[in-house]
Length: 400
Image (cartoon, rainbow, N blue to C red; front, top):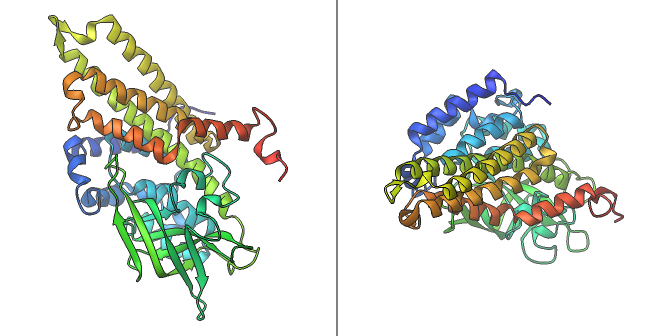
C-alpha cells in the first residue's frame, strides 16, 4: 500500500477546501439548512459543474469522473470539515452505486449521467431506523428483517393488472428524502411465504408520494418521512421480482455500505479535525488568571490526547478508503474521535460553548446524530468482530 496521495488527489482536496472556506462558514451552514431543500442549491450546482462532485466515483462512460473511493473519501473529509449540508452522501455514496451495481443497461444510461451532472439528486429509502443494518454495517442484512417484515410494516410492492409495480407503505429517516428527485425504495414483494426485499426506482414527483421533512438533531443532515400510497415504481435491475432469479440486492447493499462507511469515516475525521483546530485557536486567545488557558498543563494534555485520537482515526479512514472492507471499524473510530473532539470543544469554550447558538454545537450535534443513524459504535465494532471470526467462526462460515 502506498499511503502517499497523488497530485490529482491533492488537487481535489485543495480545490474543494478553498471553495468551501469561502462559501461554507458556520453562518452559511445555518442559513443553508433553513432553506426548503436543506442545502445551498447554488453551491451544490457549482460543486457539480466545476468539480464533478456527484460523479466523482462514477465511470466515465456514464458521465462520471472515473475516480475511486479514495478520491470520494478525500472529498468527504473536506465536506465534513465544513459540515456542508449537501445531497452528496445520499446521492453519490448511497444511491448511485446501487444503480451502477444493480441497474439494467437502460437504467444506468438513463439515470447515472443525470446524477453525475448534478441534474438529479437521489437517495435510498429503507423502512424504520434500519439504514445501518440495511447496509450491513451493524449486522447481517441478508434476512431482510430490516425492511419491516414480509407480512406487514415497511413498504409492500404488488403488480397491477397492467404489469406495473405499485408501492404502499412508509419509510422514515430518509436522507434528503424531502428533496431528492429520485428515490430507491426497498420494498417487500412475493407474499409472506416467499417474501423478498427488492429495490424500486420512484420519481420524486410520482403521484401518491407524500414527503415530510423531519425535525432532526443535526440540521445539516436533512431527513424526511416518505409515504407511498399506490405509487408506481420501476424494479431496479433484471428479473420479474416474483421468482428466485433476482439476486444480488443484499450483496450490493453491503458493498455500498462498506464504501459509505469509508466515506463517513473520512467525513467524521474532517469534522473532528476542524473542531480540534477551532478549540486550539480559542484556548490560545481566552485568558484566565492573566494568561491564556491553553498554557495550562491540564488543557495541553487534554488537547494532546485528542490530537492523537484524531490522527489515529484519520489513519484508519485513509486505510478504509484503500480497503473499504475496513470501513465499519474506521467509521467507529471516526465517530469516537468526533464525539470526543466535539465534547472537548464545548467544554473548553466555556460559557459560550454551552449555548446552542455557538458553532461548537454544530459538531456536537453531528457527532450525536451520526452515531444514532449509522451506529452505535459498539455495534459497528461487534459486527466487524463477528465477520472476522474473533469470537468464533467468521460470519460467512456460520451454518445457515
